[in-house]
Image 1 (tube, rainbow, N blue to C red):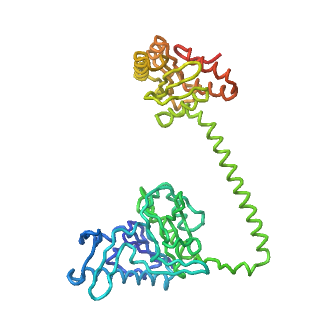
Image 2: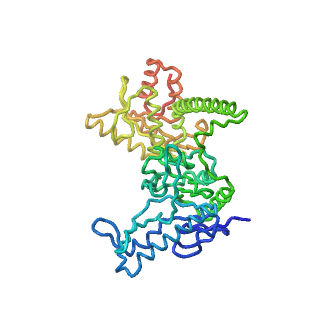
Image 3: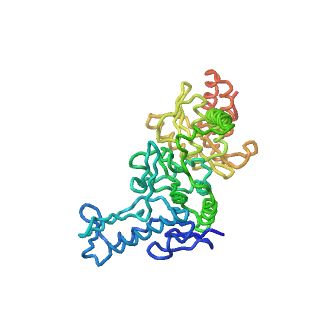
Length: 445
C-alpha cells in the first residue's frame, strides 16, 4: 500500500500529497508522512498581538475572548497528533528547519503562563545512554543563522539524497544546537552541517517514527521538490529506525567481525592519506594552471588576476594603484591595461584609457611613462587561430606612444619560458623584451 502524504504550509505540487492548513485540515496522525513548514504558523498571533515593552507578545486569557486558549488548544491538539503519527504510527514528520520565531505568551490567572512558538506542535522525546541525555525539543535551540555552506554527511540516508539533489540551492535559516551540548550523533543521524560544524539537517528517532529537520531550498519548483521529497519519504518509511549502538555491544562479537573492522580501518586510513595527497596535488595543479586563464577569461575578477599572476611569474612586482596593473622591476616600470572581448579585435577606447593613465603619470611625474596594453580578443577561438586582436588605430597609437601591445597568447608563451628557465638573468631578458617593445610584441629573443 502506498504511504499517505500531507503537506502543511509547504508548497508541494504532487498528486499523492494532500495540502492542508495548520489550523484546519485532517489529523496529523492520519498519514504516514507529514511535510510541514512552520514559517507562517506564528502569523496567527504576530498580526493580532502587539509586543509589549519587553518585546514579548502576550495575550491575556481573561480579556482576549478566548484567543489565547484557542491557540493553546490547537497546539496541544497538533502536538498529540504528531506524537501519535510518530510513536503509534511509526510515521515520518519532515519539517523545514526555521528559527523559533517570535513566541506568544498566553497569560492565565487560573494557572501558569504558556509560551507558544513555531515548534510547539512537536512532541517530546527523551533519549538516554550511560553518559548523555537528549531532551527534545525542550533543550533544542533553533539558532538563527543564514548561509549556503552546506556540507553533506555522507550517511546514505534517503533525505540526504534529497539534499544532494538540490545541492547549491540550499539556503539554511537556522542551525540546530543542544543547550547541554549533548553529542547529537549519539542519538540521531546528522544529514548535513555547515563549514563550522553546526547541524543544518538531521533525523531524530521517536521509537519507530522519525522526525526529519531539513533546511529550505530556493529556486526549485514545487513540483520538482515534491517529486524528490516523496521519493525520499517513500524510501524512509520502509527504512529501519535509527538505534544507537550501546557501549556494551563489543562484548558480543561475531565470527569474522574483527577482521572486517580491521580491513575497514585500513581502507579508511588509506583513503585519508589519498585525500590528503589529492588535496595537495590539486592545489599544486591549480597553482600551475592558473596561468592558462589569460587565454580564455575576461573581466576584473578573472582575466585581470590571471594577467597579474602571469606578470609576477616574469618577476614583476605589482603595486597597489588605481590602474589595472602598476608594474615595478629592476629593469623598469610600466602601467598595464587589460582588455578582453568576444569580438575579433580590441578597439580604440581601451587604448585611449591607457593613454590617459600614462599621460597623467608623465605629467605629474609620479609614475611610469611606459604603457602596456594586454589584449584578449576572439576569446572562444583557439589562440593559434585567432586573427589580429586589435584595430589598426590601436596599433598606430601604441607605436606612436612607445607602448607595448601584448596579446595574452604571447604573455602565456613568455610565462611558459619563465617557468622553464627560472634563472633571474633569463627572467630579466623577458621583462626587458616587454619594456623595450614599441608596438606589437612578437616574441622575445
